[in-house]
Image 1 (cartoon, helix red, strand yellow):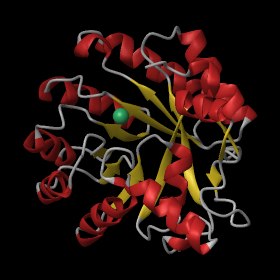
Image 2 (cartoon, protein in one colour):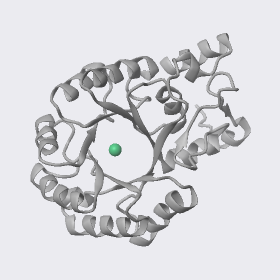
Image 3 (cartoon, protein in one colour):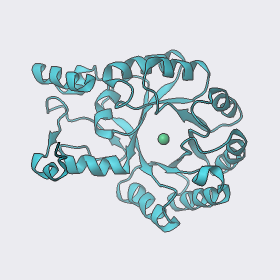
Image 4 (tube, protein in one colour):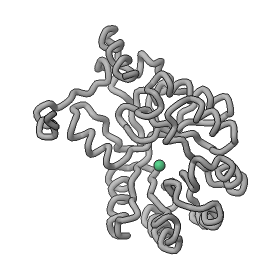
Length: 266
Ligand SMILES: [Mg+2]
């Protein structure tokens, strides 16, 4: 609703949403995200290759912590394969989706440093703020979390506990653009940046209006679905995006005919 109201306001004022929100960046970085643990190494390599070589995206993220951390050796094999495919100059991130115990996360993080992994997302459950904070103190890898935040208090607690190096915010969960700006201010007060979790095309508009912004998660499945549903979606090629400032509102148009097949009858 909040995002729809910003869209309506932008339509009324004939402005792009990013400009109405107070754009401060011309463009913002993004990273390719996917790399599910059920992919074979070959499938993982193909996806990484698409982002890095075809699209020129210099940051990629893959999932780890298969079977709740009971397959650490396989996790490390996949990370090794990823690093060797993408080379030394591409930033490699991993997301454990709350999958490790604190002990497992401490063991894994030593290997992450060895492979120059820059980002360790949800190493342990995001409810364990002390566990996140302890791991953060023990490593040079950035610890990230926050995608499950539905209200400002959640973000304030996470930042206040010293649990993260970068606060993740999902614009479709946090309460829309209005609450996003307040969450970003909480992070800024602690000297932290924010990163957008999923919903890449919506996130771009609020990202360019956020001073302490790091990057957008350009999630493979969202990218695919948004392309099916909308005209005017952004192209992640090159690793940065900027909203179309010549178009009003979000600059995206629902493809009514194409989406009709997904209509659910009451
Ligand atoms: Mg995640």
